[in-house]
Image 1 (cartoon, rainbow, N blue to C red):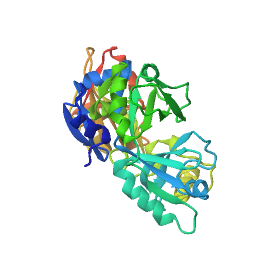
Image 2 (tube, rainbow, N blue to C red):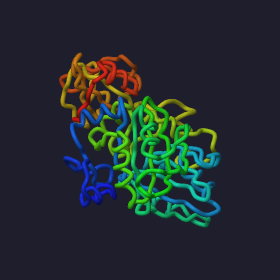
Image 3 (cartoon, rainbow, N blue to C red):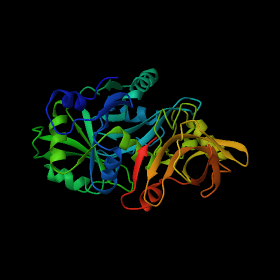
Image 4 (cartoon, helix red, strand yellow):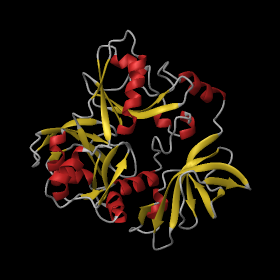
Length: 375
């Protein structure tokens, strides 16, 4: 897989934040860790972690029909999306199965679709397939931009200390920030993440500016974070990852990601199936969290058992290392009638409790210095 622009720069330039190891992550090669991933996760929870988002890519949609056309392609409301704001959405096939997930932003004279690099080829091909007589031009602009991320209660303060002036933003609101930092880029696009226990931001910028901006954020007090700690954060937050927790065989309502669905926007590809599920009854299984009663090695695909019957499977897992007792957290699918919060199930040789995501109260309630390491 290709190196992200930041990793290319780190490999060739001197600096104090060289990764200890690299990993292929969501379609690109990036840092797996810079130090102990447990400490990196703690920075995301208690301070500010800065991380490479070069595994994210952007697709530009221009043309007079772009809004109407994309509104008819994805599961969320693009028609009423205000300039400078975004939404999370699924791309479905006609049978209602999930082909990919994305964030769509109204960038004024263009719509910008952001997704993982691992999904770009399929999403662009699907878009191209459905453009017939529409005034829409689809361009993969992943090579023109890269991005960095920050998360933690000190994120906005760190941005301002680094010279990137950011006002109070709504979730998924984007602005062109004034930059007085040492990167020399003069301006960049800053987007606040979705609502969650921890404030987070993305910085979209030219690849040539990634390394200097990275260094400026570290100098301002941010802790470098690799993909291992990002996975810990994702699992604790209960956010499914496409290709891992969300697969093409899954239906939107099974994922429990109602933030991706709008039932008042009109027709789109796969809408008939989504509406039929909503009007006629729920799906038979759902995505949820699990807390094991002890630390355990849990692999993706591990079966979930209740009363000697197989009722689901694990898709992701992480272990909490806490003074009050180590626990393993997992995400996965379970039959809806069994998946009630507090219900006891078995995963491997361990008892587990069904727990509604997010799982922060479990991860952070043990002790302020609770730590995670990825399975």
